[in-house]
Each structure stands twice: as structure tokens, then as C-alpha cells.
Length: 332
Image (tube, rainbow, N blue to C red; front, side, top):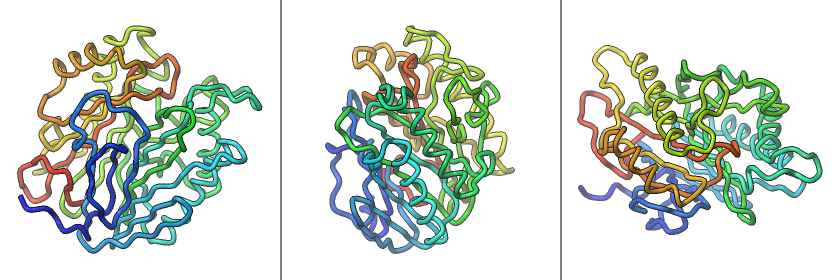
């Protein structure tokens, strides 16, 4: 297959070691160590149906094509993580409004030292992040049950810059929840002053593909962590949650539409708190999930200190009856 025109490449997720030629869109860089997997698979690219234009300002990148927006915003912690998160999200909402792409489909967050305790407030940094995000949603008058996107929040090493990476469109995605779990925005106060604001998945219908963005998923049932200290069983519980979300999403498919599956068009990113768990987790995933989906393993802290593994996925099905195929740059 010949390479797609560079001018249509809207955005991509990769690592500093990813092989990516210059292109006019935005590259959302994951500040994480790769434990296993083809680095090329980390390039989760999105191809727009039209020409892409890009703006850069103060380490922000904004790429747009008609109907689509992909961006990357740094978290400026000069005045603390809560303020930095709220400022980044207000900026994000302003971009969505200004570019006439008001619907967030997917957001990726990478937060330095996510489980560390802030010495000023005595709160875990993930909880401070949730405060800032919730403040911005309230400012933008965005109710979570209607507008919360698929999302993840992973911990990067201390000394890295936090980042908010996002994909948005002019058409809404359908929020998918997991019947095995409490919706994140309804978590009890024991998890922090403000609840996390994300959907378990988002089902989005593009021009060329239908997309299922499955949020960062872990060993949580109801709202509680399960299988403390047991990475193998946490992985099994995580996969049970992934399968539950997949069933819910496929229940929303219209007559004649192919169901989403862990097929050759799918991409899994698996985040491990401890690198030494790689072999055991990889064995569990290979046994329990279809091996056709691309998968890469990265080291990252998880949003709860008692969670050892988190998995996120992007699944897609072509419109108009075509067969799903592996492609680094599928068209939205």
C-alpha cells in the first residue's frame, strides 16, 4: 500500500523513539518507557478526509481539518497541578468552540508522579488533577453524563511535563458505560473531592470508520479495586471489564454494521506499574484476548496506587462493509 498523503495526517500518539517522518499534524508524545512491542505500533495515527492545517504556540499543537481537531496541551504547574489542569482544559474547551468541533471523542493524560502526595494540600496528585478537570467542566457547563469523553490518566516519571492530548469532532460520540462498574463521575467522596470525569468508552461514527475508544481500564468492580497485590488476577479482571465494555458497545451497533472485535485493526496499550510483571501479564493477555490486535507494553504509574496494570484500546470497523485491516494511518 502506498503511503497516504502527508497533508492529510491529522495527529498521532507515539513515544520519543517512534519512527515518524515530518507531517503537518500534531504528534502526542507519551513520556513513557516501552517494555515490549513494535515501536511502529505506538503510532496510533488519524488521517483526515481533507487537508490538515496546524498551529503551534507555547508548546501547544493544534491540528485541524474540516470536522476534526487533534491537539496537545502541556500542563503548566507553575501555580499547582489543579490550576494547571483547569487552565489546560479551559484552553481545550476554547479550542473546541473556536474550531467548531465541540465534541470530545478521546483524551489521553500523562501526569508526572501521579500517585505522589502534594506537600501543600496533603492530597494525591491524581486527586488534584481531578479537581482541576472538574472545575473546567463546570466552567464550560459540560455535564459529565452527556459530554465526558473516553480517557486515560497515567503517571509519567517525575521531571517530565504533563500533557493533555485530545481528538475532537463536529459530531458527538456515544458514551458507553460498564455494567460491572459505577460510572466514574458517580464515585463516592472517598476517592477525592471531585470525581474523575470520563466515560468507560466512546462509540464514534466517522466518515470512513466507526470507532470504539475504550478508556484506561483496570481491576475495578463497582468502584473498588479488586485483587490487591496480584497482578495476574488483576489482569484477568481488567480483561473481564474490557469484554463487558465491548459487549455494551456492540449492543449499540445498527443492523448491518460489523461488531467491534480484537481484530487486526485493533490496538491495545498495556501500562504496567512494575516492569518485572511484563512476562506474566503478557501471558495472560495472549491467553485471553485475540492475538490479532496490535499490543504494546509501557511502564507507567496507574491512577490508584493499588492498581498494577491498566489497558486501553482503540477498535474500528470500516463503513460500507469493507474488511477491517491493520493500518497505522486509518482515515477518520
